[in-house]
Amino acid sequence: MPTSPIIIRRCTPKDAAALAAIMGDPRVLPNLMQLPYTSAEIWQARLADNDAPGKRDLHVAAERDGVVVGSAGLHPAEQTRRRHVAMLGISVAHDAQRQGVGTALMQALCDYADNWAQLLRIELTVFADNERAIGLYRRFGFVHEGTFRAYALRDGAYADAVSMARLHPNPPRLP
Image 1 (cartoon, rainbow, N blue to C red):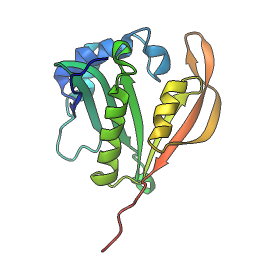
Image 2: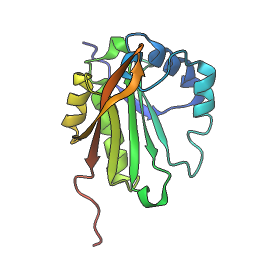
Image 3: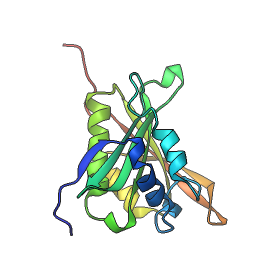
Image 4: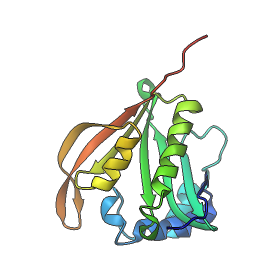
C-alpha cells in the first residue's frame, strides 16, 4: 500500500485528462452514473469555472505523488426550498482503490458541507450491488433511504440503485 500522503485540492481544467481517464476506465465506469467515452474536452468545459466566485458546486481532486487518483463533488440542489441539499459524486482510479483515497475524499466533502457550505443534507445514488461504496458511505453516516428498481442502464442491462443521504451530525445553532 502506498505511503505517500493524499492531497485533496480543488480541481482545475488541467485535471481534465486525468478525470476523463479515471471515469472512462472500464473497471471504474460500471459503478458510476456516467456515460462512456467522456473526453478531456468535456471535463475542461465542466471545470472551466470551478473556482469562480459565488459558484456553489465543489469539485475536488485527490492527488498522490503528483498524480490525480480520484475526484469527488458536491452539487447543490437548485430549487429554492432545497438550498440546504447537495448531491455527492465520487470516483477513484482502479489502481488506487482500497488505499484510503475514497475516505480522504469523503472526509473533505463532509468537512466542507458541515463547516463551510451551510449544507444540512447530502444525497447520493449508488448501484445496489456496489457494496464497497455503500460501506464507505455508511462509515460517513449515510443511510439507505430507498431502492430504485431498474434505475439505470449499465452495460446493456437495467440495474437497481439505492438512494442514501446524510444529515449534518451537529447542525449550527445560534449562540
